[in-house]
Image (cartoon, rainbow, N blue to C red):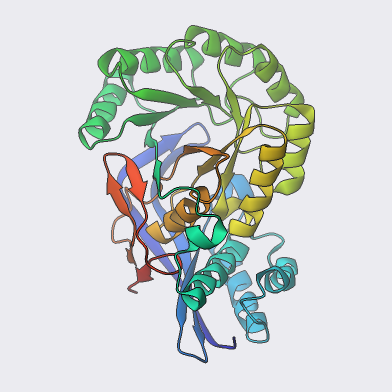
Length: 353
């Protein structure tokens, strides 16, 4: 298959509501880069780069530059030879994993289009739907409860509560939400904000209220993460500590967490996510497929990957829900907190720019 043209289009998307985490004072908009690939046989595939500068250090300018370099190089590549093609693009994206992710998605989309099959079936076809959490950002207790009730009215049964600034306040917020919505599954994401002692105090205080505690300690301190994991009464998931297969392998070999969270945007796409999930599966650790603020095209890619593996036990694919004017026309459905694929070939999405 011959690529004849590649378009690289950066855009900014507003959020419907400001969003705050332990390491973001406030987010009101996100920058993303769409990539469209055309082939000689008139197929058109899409990829997308979304990034979190606080995690990867990427900027819009660096991602656009990397995508343009990949666009030039890809004209000499067969995109259906995905392993070789991505290995050729990897040196161009060593500092911009989201750019590699964009081309990874486009190549996988082309694979599905060429086969006439939805991508999740080509990757493994384990199931056709996944329940996702939806995020409740950091806010005062009453506001957090109101946000949680609103998400519950929208049909979501799993709530991921952001924390990490004030452990005692986090405990109060989670307890208040649990009291208001006793039948909902709650997760707490500390975004690296706790010490070991604080993490264990929070885990013990919320033992009966939360399903898991995500990334309680600093991403680079696996000793601290391992201490929490060994003594916590609730499962501990590594998130920001997972930046690719090498870090996943180190976490698994040290048993520093009970599970691994993988984001396509920050690790480089489906190919990398598969490697991380394989490490987790061999180590008998759970995998969570997660996201940054990202268009529905990226959510579709995460969903297709998640549906291919029985080891993906947790879904956290809500990064598209609060984006205004997302140009993606998603092929998947959202029903009562479940993401459900349709049998549209490839990623199942189109983009109107």
